[in-house]
Image (cartoon, one colour):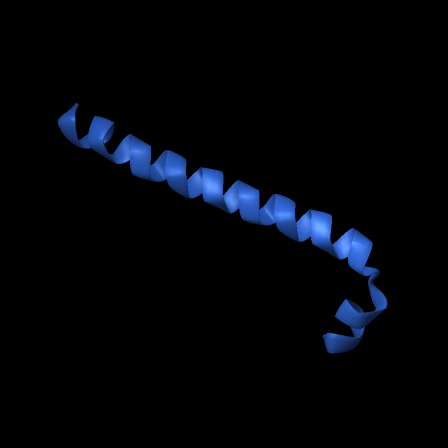
Length: 41
């Protein structure tokens, strides 16, 4: 597994990991924001 990570260029690894982090961050925010609406409705 480590050899596969090492063979990948860093400039290609960083944007994908950043997009994944942003996606998870936005997804968690949407879930947190939707909890009050679901519980009150």
